[in-house]
Length: 264
Image 1 (tube, rainbow, N blue to C red):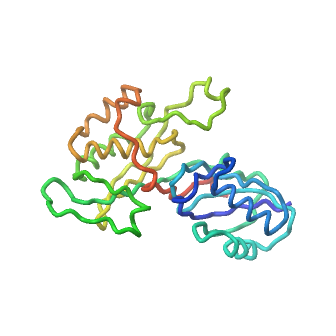
Image 2: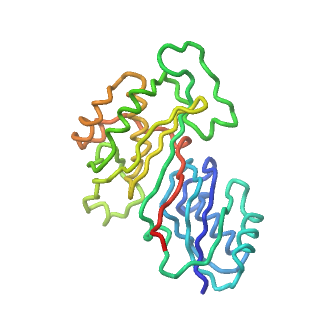
Image 3: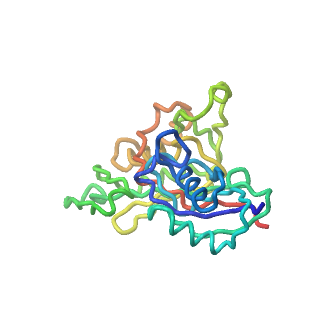
């Protein structure tokens, strides 16, 4: 049976996340239904990780096996014709059976985009977020100063206990919930770039907790508007308490940018 690796991009606005859910439209479910329509086979594509409702992907990775022997370019073409325009297959290839989109991954990079109505506290003219951009950014109502946010982002680099930035995962089973989650994570990249009336936060590491990136962004925004200072990041990390950090940023601004795998 050919074992497949697909890289796909999607607009998550109208989807209830990646993972199949009864009665709801999801990326995983839509892809599985389309594969069944094209091949007659019932498979459940495994993703590199779950993106929540409204979250987007520039390069999500999925893996699955099919009995049908289809040239990769034909499968990619057929899927892109059958899938809704909000999901595009960027590449399709046959890989060893040992490859698993999630278990084989060694790192992920996320990107979060904030639309700046104003830049800093001295600008008085408010920009209007274009409607075609609104589903893909956080249209933040606060005046945000990028400099303290950049300073705070650097303090998140390295290995820390990120309990203060983790939300309870509603999809975990009861048995999993009885275990203590590994809240110690390492960030290799944590940077903010001011570009084209947006703040773009890029974060990379081997693993992330539920809502971790969105909770970090919400906290950085509190720093950008002056409610917190950069040094508060250290206090928040040491607190190991979700209530010590800022709010959860909206899903609309979050993108799974890329997934890393060992070189073969």
